[in-house]
Length: 252
Image (cartoon, rainbow, N blue to C red):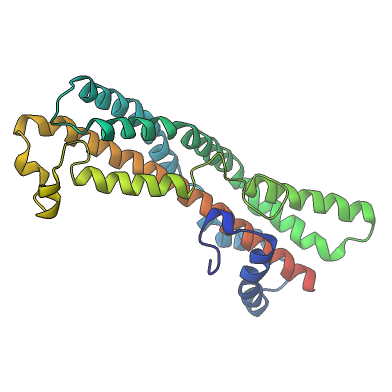
C-alpha cells in the first residue's frame, strides 16, 4: 500500500486512489472468467497463519506473569527500583489483554473463513457482468458486501479497529521494550544518563535476573502485539485488492 500506512487511513477516497495501479495491473494480465485456483494464489498472501495466532495467545498468557513479577518488585519497596515506572508498566500490561483478545478472536474467525474466500469471490466476480434483474444484482451485491464486512468489520470502506491492536499499542510496546533494555525498572540517576553508563554496572548482580525475566516477557508480548497489528493491516490490503477486482470487473 502506497498511501495507507495506518489503520485509520482507509477511506473511500484512499481506497479509490490505492486501487488505481492494482486495476491497471489486472487489466494488463487477466481475462474473464476468473479461475478459482488463480484467485487463491492471488489472495493467499493475505491469509492469517496459525503461528501468528499462537504468538497472540502467547502474549496473552505472558501478561499475567509479567504483572505478577512486576507487582512482586513493587511490593519490595526497594529504592533500587523506580516505583513510578513499575506502576506505569502495570498500567500498560493491564491495558493490553482486551485488544489482544479481540484481535485473537478476529484472527480465528478469519482462519475459519478464509478457506472459502476464493470460491465465493470467484463466483461473485464472474457473475457480476451477467446479472440482469434488480433482485439478482441485489443478491450478489449483498454477497460481495459480506466479504468486505468480514475483512473490515463494518459495511463501509473503513476498518473498524478501535477495539483491536492499533498504532497506540504498537508504539507503546516499542517504547516500553526499548526502555526495558535501558533499565526502565531501575532507578537511573541523571549522571548515569548523561554519561551513558550502563545501568547493569551499577546494579547488584542478584537484582538483575528478576528484571531480565520481565524484559523477556515484554519481548513476547510485543511480538504478539506486532503480529496482531500486521494482521489488521493485511485485512485492509486484502479488502483493497478485492475492491480493485470489483472495479476491474465493472469496467467490462
